[in-house]
Length: 212
Image (cartoon, rainbow, N blue to C red; front, side, top):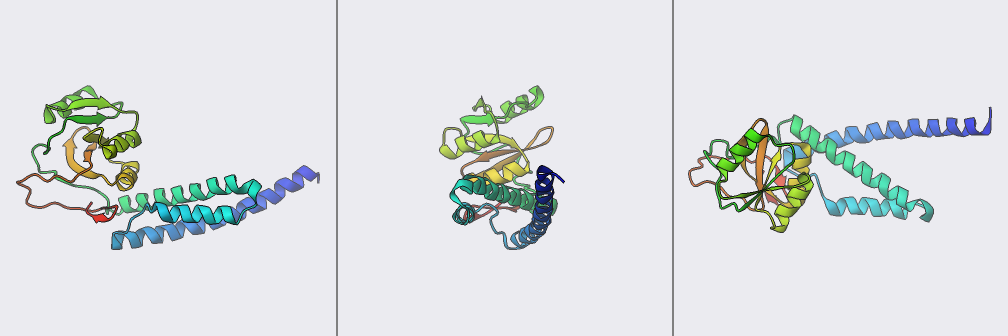
């Protein structure tokens, strides 16, 4: 056996061990998601994630610290994605806000849209928000960031795992569910309820305000 082949076999053994530990970790992540679903705990906790990254860097030789940081952040990201996935599967984050409202409420001057929204759906949005200027944005992250900064009033976004993460990250609220070709939400920085609402279901905790 050559030296290179021996090293490859060692790496293979290590990789198998890492995979086994990763699977164990993800099973624990499932349990964490179940607990957070019951207690309405936040999935994204920046301070905790930064602490994990710092600990990983502190326990790594200097020449490998950048790699340890990427590795730790990747684990945190995968954990978040899995938790959101589990919560969505269980229906705990299936947002059904203001579905019976006949039209969106509140003054909307600018509304961000993502690329790919069809012409018919765009016409529906224009009819629902006749006074709003429709602004194209590159992606959901950019749209939510602009809403949080106040440069755009609302963003119209499809319901995805990424949206759940972005709502929590930027402390945004779902304003209305729109009747388009798929489930779209108008997202804003303040929670505005129509005056005729009799009941609203909130199923996600965003930041420190226990609402959605």
